[in-house]
Amino acid sequence: MRFGILISTSLMSFAACAQETVDTAAETLPPEPTPIVSEISAPSDTTKATYFITPNMSVPDTADMSRGDVPRDKYGRPYTYELLGKALPAFAGDLADGLSFSSSELEGKWTVMEVWGIWCHDSMNDAKYAAALATALAQDPQVDFMSIHTPPNAAQANRALKSYVSVAAWFEEKGYYFPTVVDEDAAIRTALKIRWTPTYIVVAPDLTVQGFRTGLADADGEAVKDFVRDISQTRAIWAANAQTAEK
Image (cartoon, rainbow, N blue to C red; front, side, top):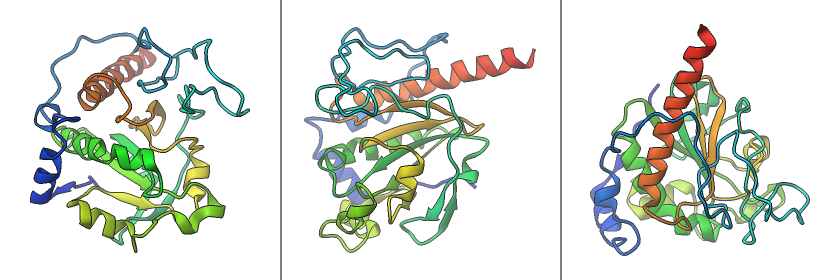
C-alpha cells in the first residue's frame, strides 16, 4: 500500500509565508541528476550535527560524550544513530486519521520517516521543512514520506500535544497532512532508539536504516533540496551494493 500525501490550498499560503527561510517553490522541484558515488562524505564543518549521516560515517573528535549515550554536538544533537545499517525494529500503531499501520508495510520501497512532537520546539521549527520535504518526495513514486508523532518519554506522555486535542487537529490547523503514526506512550520512540526530535530516518526496501539526520531548520544551505539529493545518492549506493552482493 502506498501512502498518499494530502496538501490543501492552505499549505500554499503556509509555504508562501516561509519564503524568507525556505524557498519551497525551488525545493519541491525534482532533484537534479547527480553522479553515482560510492559513499556520502561528511561536510568539512562538522561542529554541528545537522548534516546527513550514513552507516560508515565517522564521528568528529569534537563530539561531546558527557550525556553517556551517543556522541553529540554542543547543542545536544546526535552525531550518529544506533540503528544505522541495521534492521528497522518492527512497530505498529494507529495513524492520526484513524487507520492502522504496521512497519511491515514499508517493505519493498524507500521510506523517509520523521519522528517529531508538537511539544518540541525544534520540531515546530522544522514543520514547514517537513511539509516541503513531503511535497518534494511525493514527486518520486519510489519514495514515501511518513512521520511518527511521539512524546518526549513515557513519563511525560500527557504533555505530548500541548494545547491540541489530537495530532489530527494540529494538521488541520496547518492545512496539510501526511501519514503519521501516533505513538501514545513513547513505546515506538523507545523501540526506534530516538535520542532527538526531530529525527529523520531513511529506510531501504529491505527495512534496513541507511541514513539519519536531525532537523532541517538548523542546517546550512538549501536544507530540503540537499536532503533530497542525499536520499537519491543513498538509493544509488544501496542499489550498487545490492548488485555487487548478488554477483
